[in-house]
Each structure stands twice: as C-alpha cells, then as structure tokens.
Image 1 (cartoon, rainbow, N blue to C red):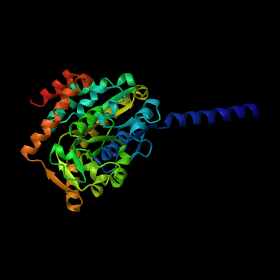
Image 2: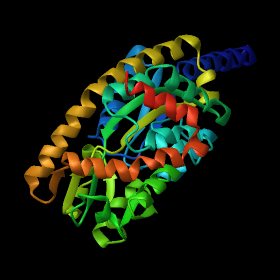
Image 3: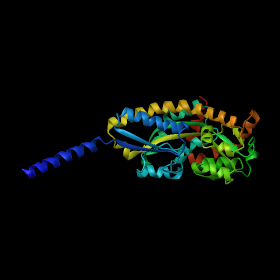
Image 4: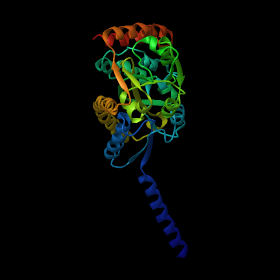
Length: 330
C-alpha cells in the first residue's frame, strides 16, 4: 500500500509539473540599440503590451533597449543563433549580412516624400525584400519608420565642400560609405552606442541621424551645427528568428501578427511627431545651430549625391533602384 501511495504521489506531482510547464509563457526577447523614448523604443514597449494582451499572457515579451544585450554588429548573429527572438535593426544592417538589396534604403534622395517611402514598404517591393531574409534564418514582420536624417558636425555643413576631410560616423553600409566619400568626407564605421563618446572626444567630427536619435543620445550636446538636409532615410525592419517563429502555435502566431500590425500603425504615427519635438527641443537648448538648405544648396547636394545611385547599381540592382524611383513620381 505504501508503494502504491508513493507512486500515486509521484504521478500527481508529475502531473502538476507537466501542467506548470504547459502553462509557462513563451518568452520573446526583443533587443534593440536605441533609447526607450525613441519611436522604435516606444513601439517595442507597445508591442510588448499588445502581444501579451492578444495572447492572454501565453507570450511574455522582454524588451532590452539601449544595447543592453548586444551592440549593432552582434545582434543579428544573436538572432540567428536564437539567443534573442526579435530585433528591429536599421535596414542598413542587412547588407553586411549578404542581402545587399536592403541598402537601397540608404541611397541619398531615393525617397522624395514619406508617401513614396510607404509605397515601397507597404507594397510588393517591400514584401519581396523581406522574403530575401528567409534563407538567412530570419522572418521579416514589418517596417518601422524613423524619418529623414540630419547631418551634424562642429562646423556648418551648407555645401558639399564643407564636408572635405571630416571624419563622419556611419553605420556599416557600402552605400553610406560611398555617400560620405562623394561629399569628400572620411567615413568611419562605429556602433551606435559609441557615437556620443566618439563625437565628444573628436574621434569623429560628425554624423547623420534623424532628430529623435540625435536628441535622445544627446549628440546635440557635442555637435555645434546641424543641417536639415533630408538627404537620406533611416528605417527599421522588425524581424524574428525563423525557426522560432515557424515553431509557434498557429493561433499564437496569428495573434502576434495582429499585435505587430497595430504596433506598426502606432509607430508610424509617433515617428514624425517625435522627430519634430526632438528638433524643437534641440533648437531650444541652444547647443546646436540648425540650418535648412535653400534651393541652390539643395541642388548642390543632389548634384554631389545622386551619382551614388548609379554607382551602386551593380551592388544593389539597377532594376530595384529604378522601380523605387518610379514609386517616387506616382
């Protein structure tokens, strides 16, 4: 009787243990490199909220901002290895991964308006680009927006000649390298988390960023001048480890897709607002003097930078570049 009682107790314990494991939430580690009060940082927090609600707590999203887990160069490898499940890297990151077509988003003056951009990211071109990530073990879920970029340095940048000899920080991108060289600058690849100190110590002279990134990383404290050039775009792709994503129960995946759609709508709404507020705050601080290019200066910038599109055709694909340019004139 004692043996039977012991076995019954073990069976009950095993049942409870099995039940506990069955009820354990699916954990999604979502790592990113920017501050929590940027558009991407706020969107990551919103996705956590919506995803956990949509799955009735069956999914737990752990958000790690500000390079807490991984820096720029490390995060994609971590995702592929399954150390994290979700990222929202800038689109420039996929070129070094071997999917060079994504570097089309880095081309200067490729998107004349936000609508031209959304024609691409929300249409067949954007979907086909995300599909190209799958052989790398990555599933693309959405495009998030961070707007057009500002050039900054400790000297005024009004014409292309003003860039000559400057050390300008860039992300790891052949297109951005070519862009800076076209302006006569010396491009320097640095992780995003290292940029403030590099600007502060003079390791680099300047950089390019949307206003929200520039402000939240306090770059305006160590940059005397900014140019509202709108020469380039910075956006992100929200991606997940493909093996992890494909292994989720179908109902969980559907719920997460819905949460991502709702988050993406939210993210687009706040990105322009946050950039406008960041620019206003930096102007009020008096630390950085901002200039808007006049028509003649804008023409000079375009003359210097548009040839980069032709230069990159063999790398990115002439057909893709032409297709995106056509979206801009619709």
